[in-house]
Length: 121
Length: 110
Image (cartoon, rainbow over the protein chains, first blue to last red):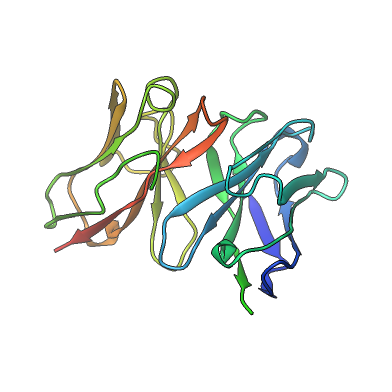
């Protein structure tokens, strides 16, 4: 069964930076695009970013464009999101999720359990 | 406000059939497949339907999906208490070049 395990969440001050990671296992990581999706406390799901299987194309939500960078290390089966210039409204559970194929239009078929990022002074 | 519009709540009694709508536009639902996710509070979302009406392995046929124009619907028949959850629609949006989620519908089984 697909496994996605996020780590790196925590408390950070407004304007600060944080990198969250997602370790993938039990599937061929290099064959699948990957997403980050977040959920603010008590709120709905918000798509954050997507990266293709080869890492060459990336897509971002307008709310994080220019501040967040999605990346992957296929040699380590690991997905990342580097979050800079964090704002209070970035507080959320961040889910790592697998697309059911290589490209951006393929839907998410598996989700990690999420890691909480809290932006607070 | 979400690009995709869902009712915030829905309810039904055990055994009933309920539907949840998802309304969008020509750049998302009108031109791409709709997918549905179920999220039980405190847990990660789970894929319920993909490509408008396809069920992943393990999802019972009580769950079905349909689409017409720029709107889609999720139907749950034979409602059970463990169907109580939040339900989200999700679609790729050509104008935004990104994924959009509906605001979510909280289903209560009375």
